[in-house]
Amino acid sequence: MNIKKKLKTILETSSVEPFIRHIRFPFYKNLTEGSRIDFKYPITALVGQNGTNKSSVLRALYGSPNNYSLGNLWFSTDVDVIQDGGRSRFIYGYHDSSTSDIVEVIKSRISKGSDPDYWEPSRPLISDGMKPVPEPVVSPNQSRTRWKAIEKGVIYLDFRATISAFDKFFYHSDFDKYPKKEHLRKRSQMVKEIIDRDLGSFKPFKGKKEKIFKNIILDAEKTKKISEILGREYISIRMIEHALFTNEKSSTIILQSPSLRYSEAFAGSGEFAVAILVNKLLDARSCSLVLLDEPEVSLHPSAQMRLMDFLQEQSLKKKHQIVVSTHSPSIVKNLPKEAIKLFCLNENLGKVDILQDVSPEESFYILGENPTKKTIIVEDKLAKKFVEKSLKLGGDAFFNAFDVRFCPGGAKALINNYAVPLFQANVKNVLFLLDGDQITQTEFLKSSSLAEDKNEILQDILKNILGLEVKITCDGNSGGANKSQKIKLYRDFIDYSYNYISYLPILNPENFIIENPHGHYLEFSNAAKQASTTPKEMIVEICKNDIGEEDINSDNIFETQIRMLNRIPSSHSAFLQTKLLLQKFLDDGIIR
Image (cartoon, rainbow, N blue to C red; front, side):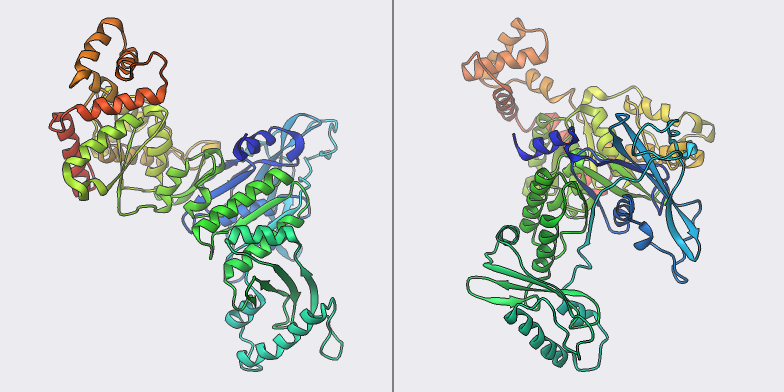
């Protein structure tokens, strides 16, 4: 069993408890009201461009367990005043073993005494969809009026702010008692003395204040893990927490390789950050909540992927719940779709939508992978081959201007799982080509052709155009969508469909290759028509004749389909029509 399957399996056991099962936001920052995240995998990636509130969600998670407060990370000042258009609050759920149910805790921002940023648990709010607590008390996790906050250790690391003692002084300090270079030289003599004498205490200035808070050599396991992630060999790593360069506590690491010993002054910031993370994570108690903000900072993509391998390993071993905020494709590349939550700005609403359970490929679109290429999404892998053959008619430059992908699950999945999220994220370089058998009797149209009295039936009009139900997230869905926003969204998606959704000029690729056999496939096809009643049965019979075997599998069938497709002349009108459609999309950015 591979590690992904093992991680999915442990989530179904009590070994991960306590575990935050979901978090939702009735009113919080710039998130669409009613936004929700379900945690279906021990590791979750919050993916999106800068400014989409990913870090804000990490901070809400930080403030969820007992004895942790969001007010330590998000607070109001005279310059940056938090102006609630409603009371800021979030709700999270965890499993209660006594009731065998998911129970919910709400934390709201209130003013308490002199602190305007106090976050306090409160009674369940029925208006936010919370259930009243049972009476009488039925669980140790319950008080008379509310469910208790989850008991869970928290590790929070913002990699943009995880900087060494040297960097903190040299790049971020205005300390000017000495020139910086001279100051560092003087204080580095003290650091060397601490290292040489392996000191656990150091009070250099008339013995007044302690300047060392930790002086350790990382054990062999930590050194090995850091080496593996960074792709380098370290013999030993020393970590010192001190207040020698400034009056604030900060860290120095001393790295010993087979040929060199150096401090963080000469190490990369990635080396420093990984050493801090590995040290904290291997020391963390089991079932901790680990929150990592942009761990990709200063790490090469291959090191990012090895870091994710390490996180999966630790999550499996110590049952950690890990949530990562990122905009790196390398971080999400090998995660299952249920682990990926996509944050995208809904320009129609001016708020941020959270889209759940998206594929790594879909994340790549939003993150800007291959931004200069146009993307074509079709229903299956044979349709992908059909489109690629059509593209080859335009030469290498034309072929390389596109990236063709397929979406398993058919037209409904393609529209709702790909087209709707990309529409909401305002992505305009993707074309959706459905099979020809999806064509309806209703033509694509522009919303400007629809009178105002059609606003009540826009969803039905869209269903008639596409032949399927389209669901678009609207602001305030948890308590009744804003009507004017809903109208605008559906009108805008009607226009989006007009510009970016079309059909292949064939019924479907499977029928196409059966109806256009060439070479010896003509004989095979005629024989299959006599023995079969459906296209799928015909393909099976053709494949058996093609490879001369009765025992065939799906790979054999697909390989036969590709050979049949390749035998059809490129001059066939279906390829030419597809090429012309794609040429228009490349030239104009739209298809109509």
